[in-house]
Image 1 (cartoon, rainbow, N blue to C red):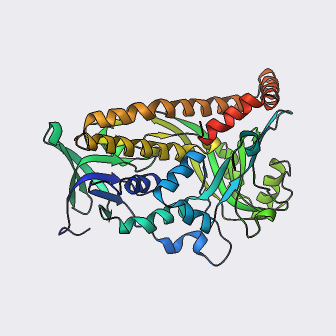
Image 2 (cartoon, rainbow, N blue to C red; image 1 turned 120 degrees about the vertical axis):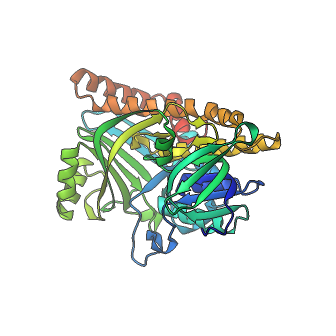
Image 3 (tube, rainbow, N blue to C red; image 1 turned 90 degrees about the vertical axis):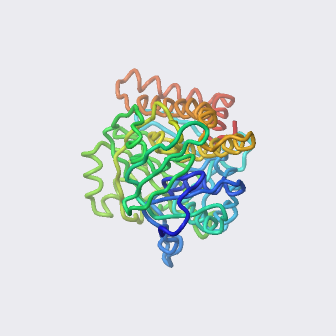
Length: 411
């Protein structure tokens, strides 16, 4: 943005990823003047689904029903459906160290699907097709360097300084800049965090057998391994899956070093050849797994959303869904407060947002943490109990279906 442009806004959103861009879009019908900043501009031409050859983004999200409804509110769902996504109707979870297994079905809970696998870049592309036409929004490419609070009370504002030398001010500053949030660090938010001592390997594979719109997750001794179904030209005979493989650093390093042929063989073996042989795999990427939660989401004129507030183990693909719920709640509270004549940075608005989200996020985080520790335990009595427990829950439809509905965001 040039220095001749507007520098005073009602809301500045730092972080133009899926969560930050969604918040900007949610506020499109308000009188708020919004600035959306990110370190890099979004290039729609480079995303995988635009390419001629069959390519997929290795970063995908398992979108819940609640997030799907948000996408409809954002008016991007139809475009995503027309482009490329894969709803899955069934999910199988089982333990490598025994016979315990749970199978979930959309039919059992009277839903059309359990969730939808969507490439992250496609979600972003759908948002950025809409955002440039939003009259109350400006988009800039900047890296924030510092901030300071100005004035006090109802008219208090916050001013940011960028590496380019530009300065902008707003009544509310939103940190949507991800797990390694610079804004969170600059503001001195306290966090509770720990390293899982695991790496997640992600890639796209083609399987011998069709996935039949079924998500698979197997707990093996090195960590969970998930196969998430992707759309193909013929969904009834679809063979592409996105995989997420959690492993200890040494194991992850050895897997990353394998040739494509050897990696494919090891992957098929580790999934018990549930989808037959792996005939092809794309480039592999790995990243460390770390859990983090801010003890507070809010300060005067400043709020954390998405991964800036919380990151969880990718065990159930819930991370980005929690972020979408965050911005959905924040947008509602902002609109409610504005109707009552309050400033966007009013602390009462921010408190309402925090009360709505912090407990739910913590509950999901501890649930995933419990699952992670349960399946990481190799002691024979624990293995026996978890296998009995999984098989038992699978035979109790009321409990099993309640778990499925909660994970889908329909309860």
